[in-house]
Image (cartoon, rainbow, N blue to C red):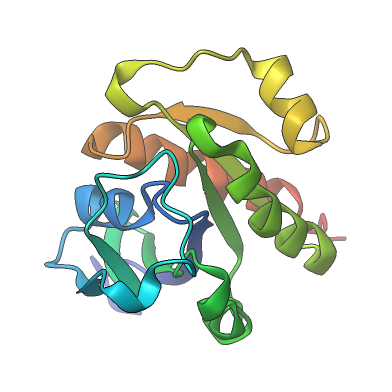
Length: 189
């Protein structure tokens, strides 16, 4: 490496969660590039397949992935891969998580049960993750212990309050995840 050059590390992060939790919004808000999204209009074909309870105003959905990038320090660039939330697209999760160092599970407290599959997925694979409680409309009716209990999160899983629409809030979620993932690395020597 020449003088003045920075040794950059590319880090893959997965952004997962239930349908309508705010995954695409988080990737959009924090990405320093125009994010790639694969959102499509919800059609009649999704009636009876996608559960819109609690998110009746939702008109679009991710059908493959979202992709964004953010430099969080001169040494670390995060590549964000957002998963689709509906069960019919879960078959893609293994490919999207391959090589990831960690994940963000975006949680919508209006529909906590929609977060269970993502929490279970990352726990079963031993992939470090944080639970990002998306404070829709600036509020959350539940406290940390209530959410931890409902999601059956151990004390070792960071729980972060965020507003997925806000860049600085979303960035703090990612910084928390990177720190958490790094804390789980084996200590050299």
